[in-house]
Image (cartoon, rainbow, N blue to C red; front, side):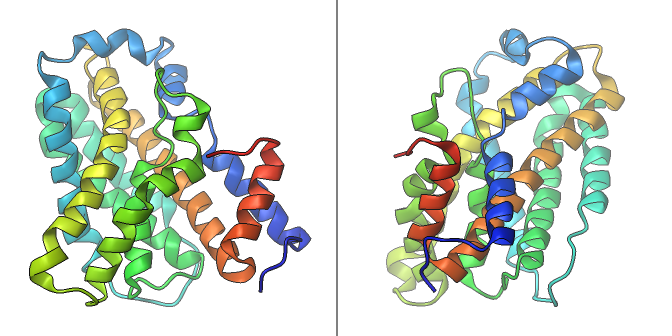
Length: 269
């Protein structure tokens, strides 16, 4: 069905998705928690942090994909278990907060895996099948969403702009996952290219998280709260993303994008 007019319930769902996907971002939420702009603590990160962040985030995403996503089976769609995943993320964040930046390399793959499981759970609750390679890769896409920073403007970080930037890498990885291209030609490079692109934006939010956890007074309790905000942020991104994918299946991508942009009053991309 390709209709520019969405049913009232679906338009409400799209409005909810847009509110989630175009929210102020993780940095603003952490700032509200600690009472000071998180950017003020970026200089507390160790020398060479920016050079290391890509490796840390790629490793976390790769381990999460192996441990949480590509080993999950399908089950009937139902409500997602957001609170159980929040508790797990809070526990791992408490460990990271206790050990500070030294614990981040250990804590991040754990919390990312928990978030990946939560994202997959949300995908299934919106009618997705995890046996579909496209769904699995859409779960990875979520980590690239909502990665706004002080240097971003609306044209660099809008939902559809990010999806368009990832589209070719997602398509190539999906072809490999579906067995449509030779393994020796496209296997690891296809998936790793997507992970690398996602990690570039995911790293923005890891840096914001690390800067907050570098504050000496944060401690274990603060680390747990920051990780709760962290997973809540990505659960929101996942809910918005998979609502839109559900509507895409019903109305077609062009109709849903037109309605999304009409809600914002400005065309992106």
